[in-house]
Length: 243
View 1 (cartoon, rainbow, N blue to C red):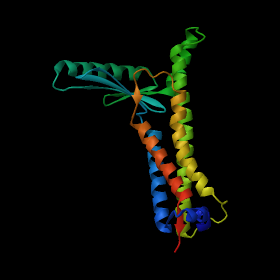
View 2 (cartoon, rainbow, N blue to C red):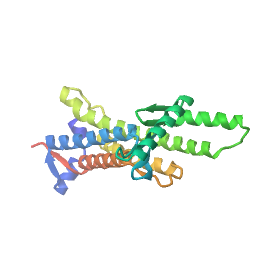
View 3 (cartoon, rainbow, N blue to C red):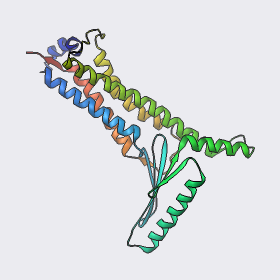
View 4 (cartoon, helix red, strand yellow):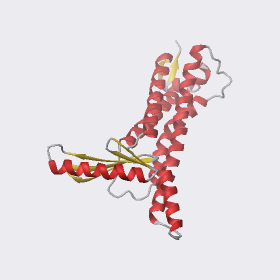
């Protein structure tokens, strides 16, 4: 496996880019671990899109993830009017959640599942005798964006995991010499690039988001992509010095 991991060693030595073998392994593994963890944070995060409406004392925050939206109203407890608005909003949200299967209400947060909401929208459209519905089309675009973004992100996550295992398993006596040359390099690049492509695919397929802006989940995923590309760069351009 050492031959697989150091396939670019000769070229890099000509460039003078040498690094201790163990140090190189630790750096690459650490960067890939960050890519993996941040990719998972993006995959299960609920803040790909964030939109805030209302006044300072009563703000409604809508956080959209790859598969669901979360709506929460936050109010200034010192403002009695704002508190009353929050209580009223919570009561309405709790009531609506009981009426629709695709909604869940828990501790002031209303969760809307895209897949189930879309199915319900299609049923209502058919019952109304409509051939199309703008709300259903928007929901369909949201599902497409989340689905493709999630699939590509999973590919990036699994690529990062695969390379991490390539570094770890030989330390436990597992022979990986049967793997093709440069597989570690290719998988490293794939992990970082696919993680970044997940964000791009999601953004391209996303319907008009209005005043909503990219949330923490997007930035964590992008940082994960940078970590993955960094690991690939070290694997490709920095030779391991065995001496």
